[in-house]
Length: 359
Image 1 (spheres, one colour):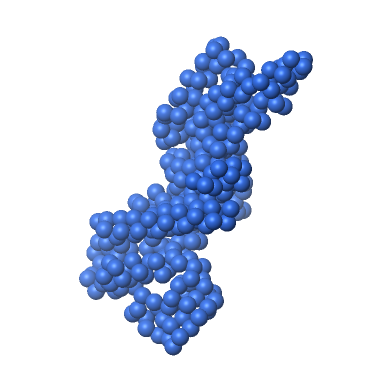
Image 2 (cartoon, helix red, strand yellow):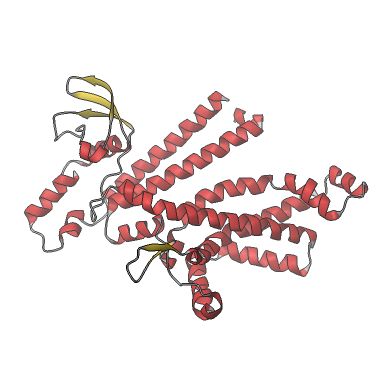
């Protein structure tokens, strides 16, 4: 089992390294000068050169890449004296560090990965993402809980009333849920429930988890702003879960032990809920584990439409302002979450099914 985990961990690190390479070179060859974005189009040449030097963009691209890897790595090599070297350690950037080894003016240190500073706000990218991540994870979890509860319930109903009107209507809904783009569903939901039916729903078209009091008395929790974004984000996994629950339950219902349970005189609801559903949920659990990670990455358009202050809004605003460190940090952050969740699922499968360890 240890060899299996190490192999999966190695695959995850290779994927992460590939993402880092693609992200760095993609955003460093895009048109646009961050220095001019920070200073304005009337900035003089000397100021632009000074800003680019401060950002490290005056160095050759390979040296910039080594800088970037050294910043991201939790264990990195640094020089205590030469500020022009890519190995120079700046305490203002990295914060508290732990020296592991030292030789002369070189030191191997343990530190928190550094995602650089925002070009616009000068704030640490990690701080910016941490603020948005809380709202995004709340939105994703609520959307996933909604999709799981409603999706499994609808899947059971479709299996019980197979080929009847409710089954066919639900299947049509599932197909639409899987095919419609998230941004279109977000706009449609906002228009219907927060504009046309606003007198009945009382929902806002835009808004985040916390609102600001008009009289300057601070912020307050506004849970109703969570309803439409969570509903919109949960529609696609809901459609998948309905299909998987229905098809898996129909297959399980043909098994011998289900027929035995029916022959013993157990009620139909007891057979389904106590015996069939437990085994029918295996593919649903697989889908849930993958969709939770996907929701974190796919919330960008939904958050932007509803102005939900999460990582999605952070990414869109950063792209609009050519704030590359924020976008690069957000992409890496989401990639790490995806890799960790997939790694945990692989390890769980390896524990449940020993045959997978041999692959």
